[in-house]
Image 1 (spheres, rainbow, N blue to C red):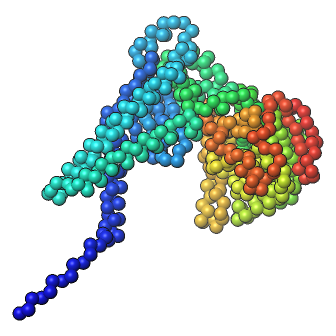
Image 2 (tube, rainbow, N blue to C red; image 1 turned 45 degrees about the vertical axis):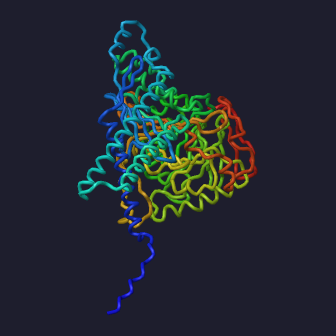
Image 3 (cartoon, helix red, strand yellow; image 1 turned 30 degrees about the vertical axis):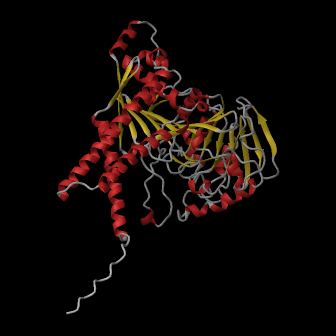
Length: 553
């Protein structure tokens, strides 16, 4: 029989797509294993660093809630420094202890927080030492994880791993180490700090502006351990908080909302005195049922008049009983220190507090409306405000009651709203919590699906809250300090949480805002604000004309 010709050899083809998918998935799995192995090594063998008076065990944590965060738990509360970053970085968990030699310091009289506080150089050296040791442990853990992975692979295949497997494992270790290192390097820098917060007793005692300015006195009366932790907290704050936050300020503005008929103005007055507040911004819902009589009965108007600082107000959806109800605004206009940012429909007043400009508009809703399409109901009011401000200077702060209203404002430095009874922070929008925990009448959570509305509802059982916005001498927001509190005793709130947020992470550049439809006039970056220049008010219904100026009442 004649020989059959050999079949032609096929050209070697590329691996099918599913092979590449499998290989990619395998490499990602190896990288994840290397990353978790590195994290695990730092947890099992934490790094110990010391300063003159303190010691700390430092480890990395993969907890999503601590991404790009330095977390220091103590028995008196937690210290958290959160950083903003493009690449996520693993959280750093530092458990701090006090060295035995510190007890000798307490034999001295007049021992102070400053004496206990580690220097900036000590903190820097401790951080550098911790990073180096963590890097070595992380790398060792990642390599060990890959050795174990290759061992499992060899056992399952009953043969040695191929060169491709070893190469993939090596690349996975390199990717995990370099990726983690790059994420940590570009995250944990003072310029990237987003917020510095403390909880528990530390949140109550930690030094921050006027409200906690007597921390040294309180610390002298506390146990040595409390003093030590306060010193540590202060050292971390001075190390990581950007310097501009602590620069001289032009205006300190208290942000409140949703009083709902509860007369807790004695507490507010105490905060104003302790924090050296220049003005109060109230984002609305002073009432519950739209009736001025309930505010008269609770003594709200006399309490507002007695605050001693300007009180800037926009009406909320509970502050009127019908679309045309102006009774609350008319009553508020009789108070000397009240500035109505929209005193009559379309009649806007822009306030200037030490050079910081504030504008706003009322909620067009009222108590008893059908509660449907609430976001859409804000559109005419927002559009009217935008038309009035077209071609004008971009306000540093724009206020309205509902988030759906301020989100429609075309240009502003900072947006402020209330309504939801919980604090929020989205971009340059600051959602202020309820100052009175919901007031005298509790509000229930709405189920938007069952009620057929698009409103997020007003929430029940919210903590008491307020914010303090601090503006620097260039009229830009330098910091936002957020407080939640409880247990009102003799007008003094007990603080559950204090959080300081870097203002540069909140406020967009005014140039960007102006470019989206705002003014081409002078901007915040070129203006100068000055503390003590007081309050002025400008009508925005006509070409700007100053109608009242002078020191704060």
